[in-house]
Amino acid sequence: MSHTFGGNWTEEKLAVMQRYFTAYARALKNQHFNKWYVDAFAGTGERSESKQPLAIGSLLFGEDAGEVGEVKDGSARIALAIDPPFDRYVFVDLNEDHAAALKELQTKFPARNIDVLTGDANEVLTTLCQTTSWLSTRAAVFIDPYGMQVSWATLEALARTKAVDIALLFPTGPLNRMLAGHGNIPPEWAKRIDDHLGPCDWRGASYQKTLKADLFAPNVSTTKKTINVEGLRRFVLKRLKDIFPFVCETQLELKNSKGAVLYHLFIICANPSKAAGNLAMRLAQSAVKLPRDSKR
Ligand SMILES: C[S@@+](CC[C@H](N)C(=O)[O-])C[C@H]1O[C@@H](n2cnc3c(N)ncnc32)[C@H](O)[C@@H]1O
Image 1 (cartoon, rainbow, N blue to C red):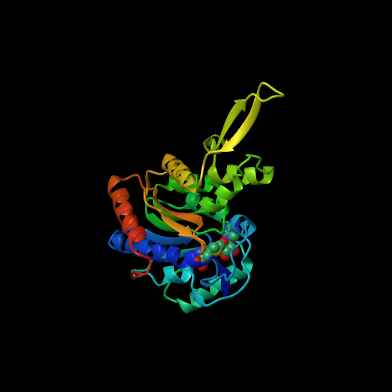
Image 2 (cartoon, protein in one colour):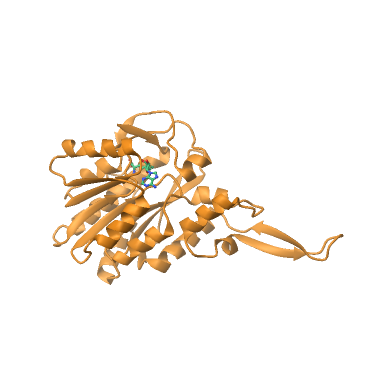
């Protein structure tokens, strides 16, 4: 079963994800950890690109796009084909039909050890982080939501493991569009931003208030937006660095066909060991920097 999402940027995103996690699997090949691949928004294993541009509601709140194009491998199938293989694959999806399609992958990849968990990625990841013995386990985690479905608290739980490497798709473009120029953000959107960015002064980083006198009043307050997508990228990078020891300075920037930035793909290492972090950042740099059509 394929599901339709994304656009021209999806190919680039999955190429980087594949390069990074392949390099990761090779680097850990001779280490005696249980090596897991965790796909928190796993989809169905197959994908077909959306033919029409996605509406903001689709990017932010996670609705499927409509029209079906050519069927290709999604992240779950790409991960299952990585050599050397992981010891365990954990696929998570909220959608029951998607989870059923993921379960069918076990028959297609009988040599792989696959667990499919149906549920909200935030709850599943938090539980997994809390119940796994991270002294003997390492995990490559792919977080590929449609929009702002990831809670900051989930990233904090991942950071506390000190044992996972993460490729995180962050919706900087939609977030920028939510930050309206006049600063009047609907409460439902503000709540979503609070949950997504965690405890921080995102309003202060995004808006400047000035007091001016006009003809009728001595102090008229005006609000001006002072941030753009690039400013948001830097803000998110700094937020991530507050909780993770290593975050790759270079991110893959994903744009739609009109050239507007939609997402940044951040590569993160939660392991505080210098050797592990430096290696992860080297692998991340080269995975992100290779041209889009180079071999995966
Ligand atoms: C962009 S698609 C993932 C595509 C997939 N990584 C691939 O390459 O094939 C997002 C997926 O997240 C699922 N989803 C949406 N909200 C979720 C949530 N809160 N927890 C887990 N999965 C969710 C959707 O059902 C959808 O399958």
